[in-house]
Structures are given as structure tokens and as C-alpha cells.
Length: 151
Image 1 (cartoon, one colour):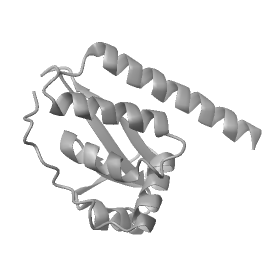
Image 2 (cartoon, rainbow, N blue to C red):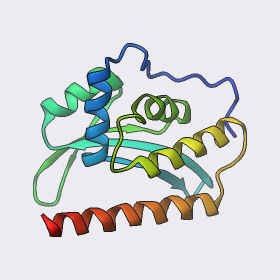
Image 3 (tube, rainbow, N blue to C red):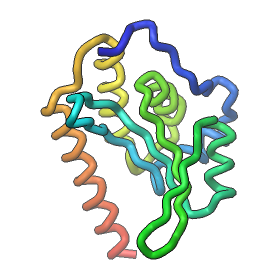
């Protein structure tokens, strides 16, 4: 359970509107908005991820987010740079700042934001919540694939 006094470690108050628009566009295209499930501990947490193959791009994102950047090597030998945000208060703060600018993943963002509020209030995220997030993620992926075929 999350304490009601949890404060975000990511300070979005210094972000310019152009920074928010850029991060929202990044999240819409190369980002991830979902719930991660730790099956061993039974914990379900809101999650934001920023992934890119260009170190300079992820470093710009990290100037705002200020989190550890992970490097991961793909099977094909490509290096990916990843910023993970697992802390509920931080996910909430980032989504609140970016929500006006998010376009393609607005439903996912709104749902995860509501689950952040639920978790901060002390209510556990249920399996039904997880199923709903996965359903919306699948719908988004289907719509994105359709749009790519049309273009």
C-alpha cells in the first residue's frame, strides 16, 4: 500500500511548455504507459518508460526526468537507452504535466493516472485494473498498426 504522504521526486514545476509537449510526443511514440506486475510480491505499479536508440535523445529527456539511464543490448546488437519510472507519485506527476499534450495514448494516460490516484489513496490495484490497462494498450497497438498500414 502507498502512503498518502508520498511526494514526487521528479520536479515538473520547472518544465517549460515546450518541454512538456516534447516529452508528451516522445511518450506517444517511443514511450510506454502501463502497469507492471511483480508476481512474486503480488505488487502492481503504474509505470512510464522512455526508450530510444539515440543516447543524445534520451539524455535530453533525462535532463528533465533526472533518473538513471539503463543501457540494453538487443539481439540484433542495437543499444537501447531506457528511463524507467516506477514510483507512483512520480508517474502521477509526469502524467499530470504531460496530459494536455498527449494525443495517441491519452486514454492510457488517463487510466494510469486514475490508478495512481487509487494507489495513493491506499487502494490496491486489482487484476481487473490490470486487464483494463492491457485491453486499452492492445487497442492502441491495433489502431497504431492500422494507421501505419494506411500511410
